[in-house]
Length: 181
Length: 137
Image 1: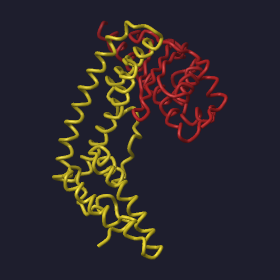
Image 2: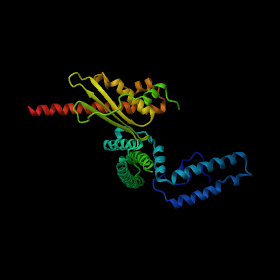
Image 3: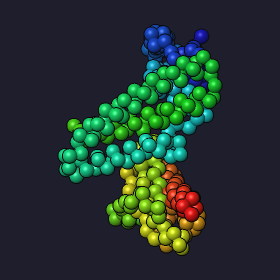
Image 4: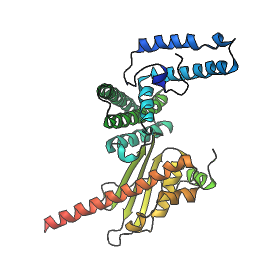
């Protein structure tokens, strides 16, 4: 049976809404669906079916892009569960992280103003934020397993916090790396 | 998206940029941030402990023009107000004054959070100071 255009990404692939997916299986299913839905196969069909083929192929590509990336997949699941992504008030951010971010931004500004003495500080910061990112990734992995075993809303909340924190740190790492180049 | 003239004015000529001694008992420091855009805002105020009036306010913000303008405006408004009056400043006041578009409302929220955080830091220092004064007797 052909997937409905109204289905969510998981349903479209005929998968259970889990945070951990078998990527080989996902890819296999992607190729199968691509073949079945391909517009070339619909050339002799009525316009409504041609339209379906186009829309379904677009949806398939969007779904595949999101589902194959663990972070995007988690964000998608959170959005579907009604969590707002990215919208985070400062009270959810650990104060010590804010301090670090502030100091780091000061150092970045000094570098931009041509003060090379800030460089070692930036290198140190980069390594530290890399380590923090790895730590968050490990925590996310753990939370994903937890959620798949028992899909609790509370776990999703924790996942959202971790994702937001990761986003914050990723932005920082990008800024620092740009400056160090 | 175009910034309003007032945002541009604060962005190009930010008022009260700088920092104060965060260890001073009369200085309250508020540090807030918005992870989604990488903004981080530090707002400090110095209170006259006898009158409860905010005598000076400083800020340093890393972020977009609206975040800088919101905090710059906040420091202007804080000076001369009592701590209680300062707590009445709402993010919507900032939105109206700067004509912030809906997508930038979070910047004004950040500024309000920063004011509240700075005042709560100041109050906490004061109550600790009083407790120490009592124990010293």
